[in-house]
Image (tube, rainbow, N blue to C red; front, top):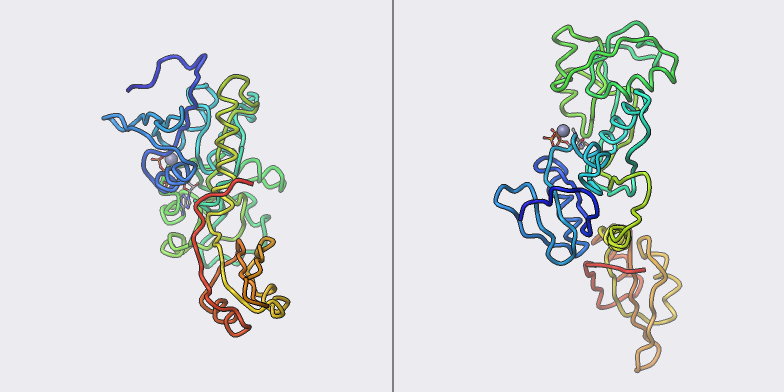
Length: 304
Ligand code: ATP
Ligand code: ZN
């Protein structure tokens, strides 16, 4: 059950995901929600697809764009921040683009931001002129500095970027921020966003022209269905037909509901796919407006 040596003429699709880290579990559960399942190898680096010929390779997230560029993997789940940085690096070295974002996946959200010491009275990007900025994202930072016309020194660090100002290595940093807790623990504040990031499905620039193309299309269709219903609920209730005009606006971001007439008179049964939050408060409002037998169901899948 080890991966075949040759990347050429493959009739299986190979997807790289992070072996361990923030994106590992959500990537796997999203792919599992698309109906994929795997047999794992003993070294846990390669998972052989059972339900479909779609295998997983478990790697470091930073290796994923390169694996796609080299054709070792067909697709990958990686942060947009990593994908854009490596794309920027290739372009900066005069190399052709070798991967791109195929789908945004809605998890792993964070921002690549400039952060400065709390005491800094931030006026705007020009404040960075002549300063040293520590980062693990030199391509994206340099690109942004060039766009802004700012001359600053990029200090490349591979980790613990947030302590650089305290260590005197730099005056500012450019790093990933989600809650901002790490920044405040280091007396820093985010002042400027360079990239809004989330996990993405990455793939080659062009579509596959062999059997992997069909597999990728099938996967994308299922993925779109899974992404659409992930936070959606099916809401069902009964109500007098003449109250529908008041009830329908209360459905949270709902698609066109199905309304069925009940045998005994003027009541209807309604079901609606809601993409907005179906809160207790909303259910109580619906009940007050005349809905009965309210039921909220999770949605497992959807095919448009
Ligand atoms: P690996 O060992 O695979 O190289 P890593 O330490 O680079 O792991 P993680 O810290 O797991 O990776 O982060 C993976 C991705 O998670 C990031 O590239 C980014 O897209 C996303 N992410 C979301 N929130 C954050 C955050 N607060 N800090 C860092 N990354 C975040
Ligand atoms: Zn990494």
